[in-house]
Length: 191
Image (cartoon, rainbow, N blue to C red; front, side):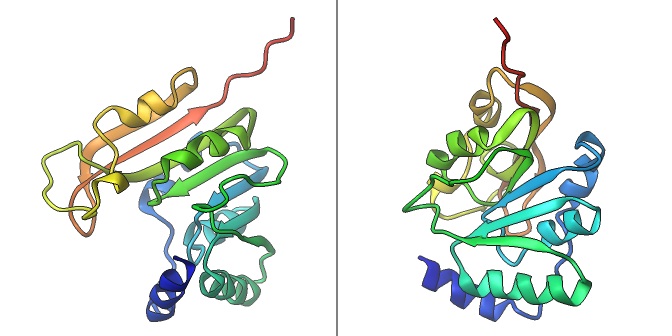
């Protein structure tokens, strides 16, 4: 799988690295500083944006090509971004301390969501945006396993404080609907 993504990122090496517009939209809901984990970061467009905003960013992806491009761009911009190459499909467990914010954009691996949630410190924020079958938008990922069912994202974050949830309002650039959530992990109880 990493080899496939290495090829894809090589082909996209000269495309712009603009952050996802939805991340820009939800930025006011994030703490103004802290540690951020970008899961399945690709070439790091969101990691670069957050690092430029003063966050301490760790970016994880299976593709060495993508992480290499991220390292080059971070160096060009004078940013420090920690990078970790790991195939999350074969090994979703990350040996990392919890973060203030964990983001995941356009990568749906349901078995990774509990790990994503574990990596958010109590009171921290999870941000997720990916494909959904909600909304009246034809197309989308060919494999239905890579799209959320309507309402699924909220169910996955049951018990968390939902700061923003949207689904079926926007069409993905390649068709299909989108869903996104910004959720705060509950503080641990002091008994």
